Image 1 (tube, one colour):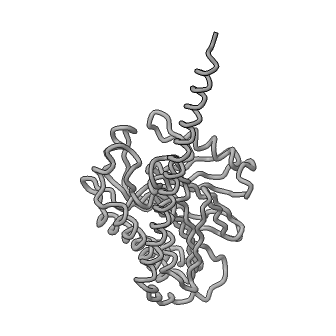
Image 2 (tube, helix red, strand yellow; image 1 turned 45 degrees about the vertical axis):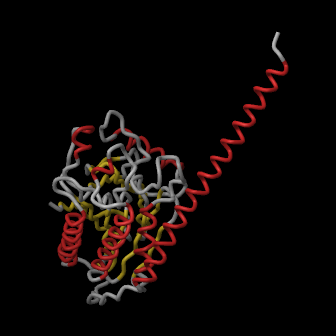
Image 3 (cartoon, one colour; image 1 turned 90 degrees about the vertical axis):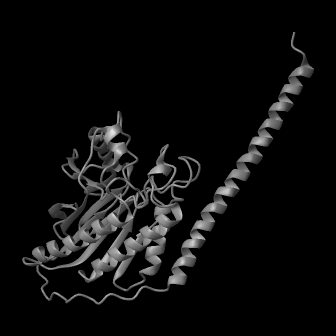
Length: 334
């Protein structure tokens, strides 16, 4: 027969343990919130200290009105701060500068047939390398999170300014990735993310009538260009199995999203995260565009996924009236 006094003592121990756990949880949350607030405050202070970026002269206006198109740029997975045998911060800067130059060259080719006055940039996440995403990562980075943050914000600002020299108006839509998260997965809300802080710094610096900047805490973004609508996700929402790029998982998840799971209608889907560019077709006939990274010599990808890819980003041209992509390019950066 059980002893009621023993049961009461055990119950009290459980109560005490719960109280201690609740106190520890509150303390951890308070510490995490303080860290997030400090990071956001540092971003705001830095933007104020640096002052407003000088304006970029507007390019020559194209008087033609017939069949205008819009450049759609998917810039993603820069992982600035990662260091391999042939990739570091300076290499990333050179490759993104090369990307900007190639956009200018290819846009002039498009303009031989029709005007291209506007560009829409999609920053797709994993713009920073981060520090606590996988074991051993701190040994593969060139800079701490603070340096990664401001180097990334500066490079994004430079990239947008280069686009302003090419296009009359630039719209920017921002999505965060898993590499920018603070702490281990699940420690904090996913939207408390270094990518978002970098977007905030760059956006505040680029207060310009010719720039429209969109960023929020949602895990997906809808990009609208006339009658064309695209879904922008980072890609870590789709799980890989056995280290392979999950083509079937991508198609299955995007098909489900298109049936109303994501309430806003969209045509094509733009995904980063996997570093291996590919194009897949959904059940409705629309496309899934997986974009590469400017990174190279990824030891983790070689060991775990038995894969590697040439550094690249993506450039499309969209007919806003027809609501479709008219030209699709993988822009190689090596």
